[in-house]
Length: 307
Image (cartoon, rainbow, N blue to C red; front, side, top):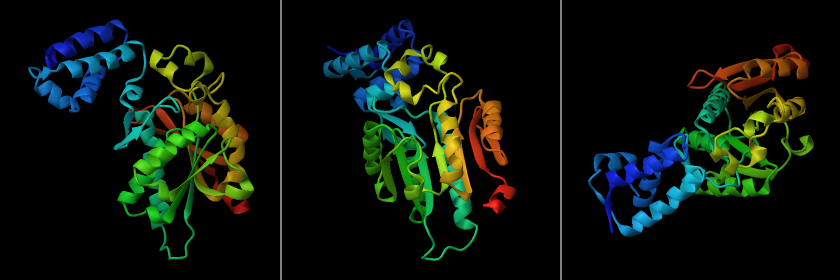
């Protein structure tokens, strides 16, 4: 028994549309491409190609999982992020494209520091912390980008998470992408004890920021992800505020924190920093869609001089 690629996709798209998939065409393409081990462009270029019985059976199994709401990334076992294919599973949140904005901002900050003045062989490493690392997406993408620029030897990244299972996934991804030698991992509630790990030159965090009431009305795929990685409390900023309280001890005098926020939280994060960190500055960076996405937090020059 066999069928053509075109007919298989057409049927799958209708089934996924009936199951209320938000992206039935993309989902069908990715899942059939996974089974046949070809790119989407190949599928679309050859709709007349035959799909054999074994492939049809594997595709049917994957399609049923997607109809039940399971994210495509979990079915495929990986997610593309910042040019990398990262392993993903229910141990951690699936990386989102908008988080690449944070990685880009972190890379720019690291390179600015490394090129601001000559660095001798005895210069201390730049210390970066990725708080709530999950799958390790941010830390690994940053280190991979620095390695491409031959700047990884001057940087050490500490990746923390309160979930040991998530940390295991992050370690697996770091090893898989050849950057584990420049990273450390620690189970911690936000920032590790200040006397052993701080201060950091750069703190990165994509912490939960979805309002609790909104979590239950997210697309069904989100119900397969760890709720703790999504739920940011009544206003979405509970966990982020907890991190803000720790920044004075955790950041070096000229350190910077880059915090991902929701697209409607730009004004709220600025107000939170004015309240919790008086005298500090906050600039909100937009993502590619023009929405507020990353809060850049640092001490003012006056605060630095006092330190």
